[in-house]
Length: 161
Image 1: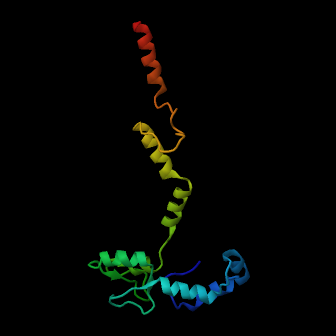
Image 2: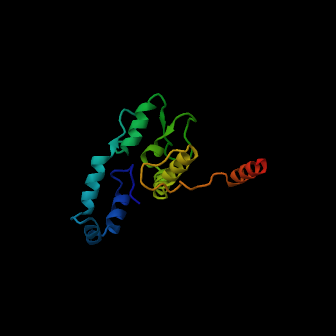
C-alpha cells in the first residue's frame, strides 16, 4: 500500500520500490515510468499541512482533506504523544485521520457507480412519476407498478356493467 502521510518514510518507500515492477507498469500504462517518478507525482499532488501547532515537517495530506481542514480551522488537531496510546484531550481531529486516511469510502462509492445504483434508482423514480425517458426505448414503460389494483379496478368496472 502506498502511504500518504509519511512523505520521507524510508521503510514505506523502500517497500514500495522493492515491489514496483518497472516493465509491468510500463506495459500497462504505455509509457516509461520509474518508482522515482511515482514519488515525484505524489509530492506534487499532496499538500503540506500548514499552520498547525506541533506539526511535523513531513505531514502531507490529500488536497480534499486540506479543504476540510480549512473549513474546520477552529477545531484543533490532536496527536498521540510518543510513549502513550491515547491523546491528551478528547476534543479535536486526530492528525492521523488526515495524513493516513482509510479510503474505504472511495471503494464503496466506486462499486455503487459500477453497479449503476444511482441510475437505476433514477429510472424507477421517473417511472413512479410517469415521466418518460429521453431515449427511443423506455425500459420501464411496461412496468406494472400495482398489478393487483388494476385487476381489482377491472373487476369492479366489469361488475358495474
